[in-house]
Amino acid sequence: MNASRLSAPAALRPGLIFKASWRNVRRNRRRSLITAASVGFGLLLSVLFTGSADYAYTRMIDTAAAMGFGHVTVAARGFNDSLSLARSLPGSARIAAAARAAGASAVRVRMMGQAVFAAGIRSAGGLVMGVDPRVETGKHNLFLRNIVAGRLLRPGDRRGVLVGEVMARRLRLSPGRKLVYTISGKNGMVSGVARVRGVFRTGAAEVDGSVAVLPLAALRETAGYGPDEACLVAVFLADQRDSRSMRGRLAGRLADRGVEVLSWEETRPGLAALIAMDRAGNYVMQGLIWLLVAAGIFNTMQMSVFERRRQFGIMQALGMGPAAVFFLILAESLWIAMLGLVLGAAVTVPVYLYLREYGIDLASLVGGEGYSAAGVVVDPLLKVRLFPEKGAVIAGLLLVIVMAASLWPAVAAARTGPLAAMRRR
Image (cartoon, rainbow, N blue to C red; front, side, top):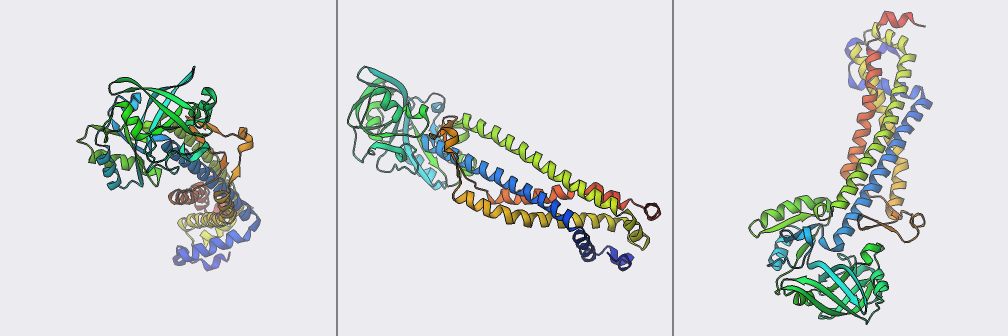
């Protein structure tokens, strides 16, 4: 850099400082590129960690919602504590209309409760779900989308039932066989009879061995419910992140009905705890990555300042003040951060697009059958989904970390006096 061009008035001009800092970055290209590459690698890892976690969490939450309760649940007070069919929710149609008016993408009226199933001399305990075949589809019902034998329930079918593959194997059921279910209805213990129409397989053995799906009308009749009674109204959202705000809106609209409005975090506390723990571990891992990046930036800028102490002395002797030197070092760090962003984006974007579109199949690592966590099936396909605001946070955090790691070297450069610096060889 031509120090004679840095007169006292001009030295503090941002344009001149950025121009001089870019020359300094270009002067040692190898070190600058290596440092920028470390920043870019940190960007790649951070995007992949965050994107894969966001995809996995969203899939798990949406899957849990499709298992019965939705992203937000409206139920009679105390129902979530016991899942008893003895607790009914009157006025379900009006509640569903209120949920649609609040902005829900879909609303389903359902019944759920504990039951005992029997076929011949064999029996098993589990959970019975009542759905309306006229409106229920696989999009919002995990069991309907995973039929592996037989067929779905049809509108007007009051005698059909869908059972899980594990339950069908335990009770030796197949399409056409009879199943007896016993529940605790509004008037005490009652039983009903249904014929197996189909068998589903979700991949979670505890679910496939305990859930049976019945027509809503038939379950209402067996439990002694009226035509507008149900156990819950399941509210589905286009974006699961809106569940808390939807819960608040619905609670305000239904405050006078004596119901409780729950988010998925309350109906699925085990899943919420699992996600919170995994997210905390993810943040720790990313923190370590950025700590290594910051150490690399600090080392680079510290070495750069150490090698250029004589240059800083000459610059200050010619009128460049300590503040200008300080901002010169920060500007060099900013250039390296921007270069790291460009290099990181060049590598990250194609990798991200591939993983978002195709992913990596990890089924062989989990036995080919998938696995479940907190009672929810986990997708063995590794894919990514990065929310825009989190992408902005990652980029902003990168700049902050790089600049913070350069503060001490910048201060050291600014405190280098002309005489002391020029004495050093």
